[in-house]
Each structure stands twice: as C-alpha cells, then as structure tokens.
Length: 336
Image 1 (cartoon, rainbow, N blue to C red):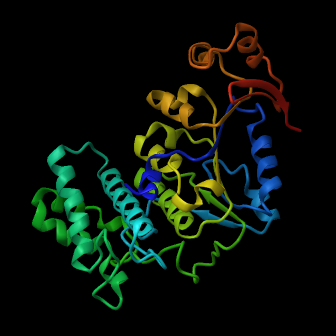
Image 2 (tube, one colour; image 1 turned 135 degrees about the horizontal axis):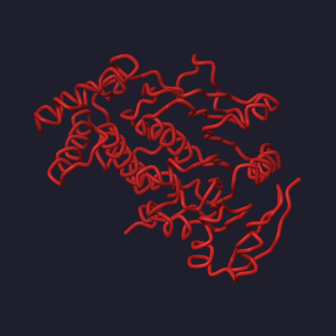
Image 3 (cartoon, one colour; image 1 turned 90 degrees about the horizontal axis):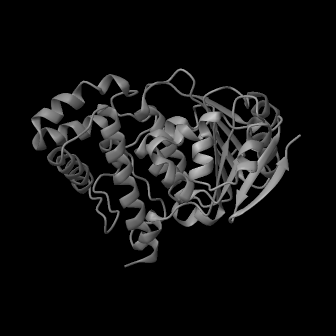
C-alpha cells in the first residue's frame, strides 16, 4: 500500500495545544507566535472572538467574516497538476471523505448505516458521471465545475434515496447561487487574495457546523495542493474539539504539506475536550498550560500525571506564565 495513502491517518507533526482561563495570557502567546512566523509561514487564524483583528490590520491581512450561508464549493474537485497516481488517489479520497462529512453535518442528525452507504455511493456516482474516478481525473465536460454543485448532487441522490433527496432539497437555500460557485478560495473578484501571508476567518455569529467545516476544508485542500510553510491557528477551538468530524479534519495532516505545517489550538479549559481528550492529547506534540480552572485538576492529575506541587502551581500562575509539557519534560515559560 502506498505510503502516500497512509498519510491520511497520521496527525500533524507539530501540533500545540494551549489551555488556560480567560485573561491567563493565551492571546499574548498566540500573537507572539504569529509575529515570529508571519514572514516565513502562510498564516490562517480561525477565531470566534475578535482578538486578532488589529494584528491582521497591522500586517495588511485578509479578514473573512463567515456566515451560515455555504460560500465554499464543497463539491468542486480540483487536483490541478495531479491527474492520476498515488497522490491523486489520496487527494480524491480526502475530498470524498470531507464532502461526506459536510453533507452529514448539514443534516444535523445521526445517519444509519444504510443511509451512509447511500450517501457515499451518491458522491462517487456524481464524480464518475463527469469522468472523475479514484484512478484518474479526466472530465468529459469542458466546464466540469458547472456540473459539480449542490443541485447536481441532490438530483443524483434522488435515484439512490427518495427520503434523503427530500431532506437535502430543503437545504438548497443555504447555498449561494444554484451553482454554488461563490468561492472565497478560488475567485479573485471577492476582494480576497490568499497569497497574502495572513488570513483571518472570523466566525462569531455563525451556528452551522457545516458552514464552519467548509472553511476548514477549503484551507486543508489548498494546503494539500500547494505545499508551503503554514501556521494554522484555531482560537477558542472548543467547537472543533467537541465534534469528532471537525476534529478529524483539523488534526489529521495535509499530505505533502504536513512536514511544513504547524497547528496551534487554544481552549479555555481541558474539560472542553470532552470525550475526545485522549485523541487530542495524543496528537499534540506540545501542551502549554496557563492558569487552570479547578475543574481541570482531575485531568492534570490523572491524564498528565503531574505531581501535586505542579498542579497547585497551575492554579496560581500569573498572566503570561505557563507550564510547558513537551517530550515528557516540564519547563516554565513566560510571555510578555
């Protein structure tokens, strides 16, 4: 089996988790990290509270305010120079999996096994109908993007499942235009240029996990196609960490760009990790603990096996002070 395909099941090589109460200094730490790397790494910040607006303005970055309307064409598959071979198959696998998750999130309910099979079969059938398979990219339409959209999808699923067809049809109002081609990450007339070194995605006010997921996927797709040094920051990332699908897409690597990419996630409390605690901590190469809430004490003692004096210390840290856990070593750090 190709080593390229196996990359899909590996975590980022560099993932840092920051945890700390409001006012403990996480924002200072993130800002310092961004400013150190902004000239050498393309930076994406996904934030729920506008803590980095001034930083983005200072560096003439892009501010993308997202809504519950789906403005990313999740159906469009663009492998660019990769038309066949192992890496192409990897891109296609990632794309179909992400589209499957997006559509599942759109329904906002659990799906049965039969429905899951129907959904994935529909996705594969849609691409095969326009000449795109796992083996090669050879569209049989000159403008294949016109055939890869939400409206095409629910026409195909009509033959697979009348129930799913009727349910998906009710979501058509969430998509911009029938062809769903209002794509921030491809069109140049949107006033956005992702060649910029800093791109801030502001999510305050949105409630749709599917719409939020679409932006994460758009970034990950770009990273897979155009490998370059990248810093991906998720500030107050509890939404990502509570949902298994958002988490999976966020922390799994990005193919050829994995070695060049750093992922940084901040949360207020380790309890926000909920049932995904072990998976997230296993994926993190570094954990930075700012002042901790008393509710986090059991996790610090049981999961991190920290001695009592260190646990007590994390309750008393001043703003900007933190304890770093890296390669099974503990050391203090202070951000200005």
